[in-house]
Image (cartoon, rainbow, N blue to C red; front, top):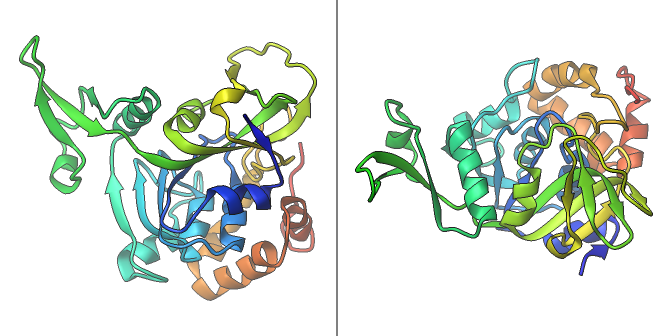
Length: 288
C-alpha cells in the first residue's frame, strides 16, 4: 500500500548510506527537491544511477554523498561541464568517485531489464566502441537462434528509485505526462520508490502520452509543488533556463559552491524555503 509522507520523512525512511539510487528525469520532472533532502540528511557512499546526470548530481557529488556514478552522459545542459563531478573524478575532491559509463541505449536496456525482473538485457550496441574495454558490465553473448553476437548488460538492481510526476490520487496511483523518459522503469526497477507530485487530486483526467503508475508499485508519495525546479513539470511550471547558466560559475569554484549550498540547501528545511531563498540573490526565479 502506498504511503503518503513529507519529503524529509520519505528520504529518512527509504534512503540509506551505501544504497544504489536513481533520481530520474530527462529535461522534465527531475527530482531536485529529493536530491537536496538527501544532502540535508548527510547520506554517504551512495551509488548514483541516471542516464543523464546534471546539476542535482553535481550537487550530490560535490557534497560528498556519492562514491560511484553509473551513467551514459553527464553535463550542465546548455551550459557546459559538471565541475563538482569533474573535481571528484580528476582530483578525488571531496572524495574519490568511481564511474561506470554506458551508451544511452545500454542504460535504457538496463532500466527495462530491471523493470521486467530479468537478470540481464541484450542489444545491438557497443560494437566498435571503446566502452566494453573500460566498462566491466558490458559483455557479449551469442544468440542461440541466429549466432549473432549481441551486447549484454546487467539489471540495475536499484535500492531506491525517485521520480517526479504531476499528480497522484488519494489511493496512491500516480500519473505523469510529457517527456516521460525512464521514470516508469525507475519505479518498477527499485525495491523502494518515492514519487514527488505537484498535487494530489480526486480523479485523473486522461492525458496525451500519459503514464499511470498503479498504487501497488508506488512506495511513497510526497506532495511537493515545484519539486522538479529548476527543471519543469509540464502544465505546472516552466524550465528555469537562467538557473543552468547561473550554476556554471558557482560550480567552478569549490568554496563558492560550498557557500551557496550552505545558504540555499543546508540553510533551508523544505523545497519551498529553498526556492524562496533564491529570490534574495541576483537570480530571479522563473515561475510557470
